[in-house]
Length: 527
Image (cartoon, rainbow, N blue to C red; front, side, top):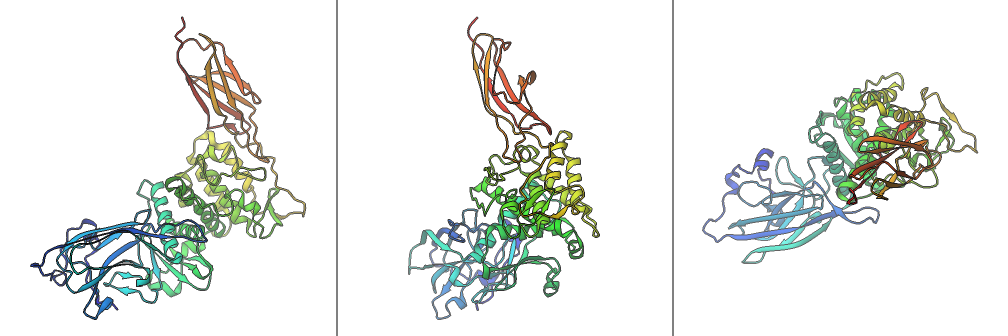
């Protein structure tokens, strides 16, 4: 084992102002300083996907002794513990950099950049064979996971473009848990009303994928952990799903009993939603798109675990339609991405076009789940979530919210869980979903006083076509025309010669689309 080296507390690491212990300041100050510059990336991949950075991983710099003690006698660079000197935290691209000058290289023949087993988001257990404790609080992974660079007899130690592929059970878990946590922080502008300390993640070779709020084996460590069966593989979907459970555990007061007694369908539906929402955030911010098998509104209908259960005449192709329905409903209320990687529209079920991009609940969905007063004895919690969300939303969204709720669930849920006949097909007669906004508005001056408008008429995918019943045309925010729903062009004969801004909105049974088509026309020079 490596000789334990005392480290300063985390605060000193953040501010970088604490002196190292005397044992680390024993450098031969008479020797000339040697420059050390190392930079590179730690990346990971899964199931043949492109490599991505191991975001959030903390890495340490260790020197190997050449006196025969080798890595067993390895040590950190002397001096204050600072970022880019003894330790670094990988960015989203997995990049690290170390820059320091030291006279304390005599007796060392190799330097290694070694990943730690703990990040700001996760604590990986059990400690893998070959891992090394370098202090009472820091354990690093085996040297097989490190980047190693020889130390020349003299001169600088410099290497750029260093590279290591970290095994998925470490890299994928660290990266996508970090991204899931960043997503939550982003929703709350960096200050969520609940804490998200590092969660213990047990990497097992048996068992399943589960968040355990009350695990007797880890009671002394808080009683909760995420278990991932890495023997069956890991993916962003799985990591984000289980981290989503941890988020609700923290939302609901971090009480194992309260979490365990809460509505299980709501817990699972939320985790399904959270996985898609976190991955959509990752796609939008970093271009890291993991589409899995489908989008969250279509997947419940197209996954074929068991196809004989349904709600409100809608077939759910999963063995737990209650989970799928809640996940789909929450996504429908939340999704405001344009375009979203999970807005797949096709000629099968597609997405709930015209509804989800209009609602765009964002943080309101988080808060609705966080503040719900779910009862233990029944399934009222889901209805309370939707009611809380509806109360926080603008009144004009009411019909759309009710339409989504009525579509994915039913007011008497779960009483409407019935056995579907073999020839059942997805369908809905809900008239309350708002229409899809028009697109591609073009405004062209026809004369000194007239402007021609043309737009693309859009409808959702059946069975959620929601065709507009009318279009409203606004000039400089003033309503100037209401046209039939099949209209795609119109001439404003009273436009006048001045510059103007036009907007076209769709109107349907569920109200007015929140999206709109917009175009501007310049003033005419003709008098």
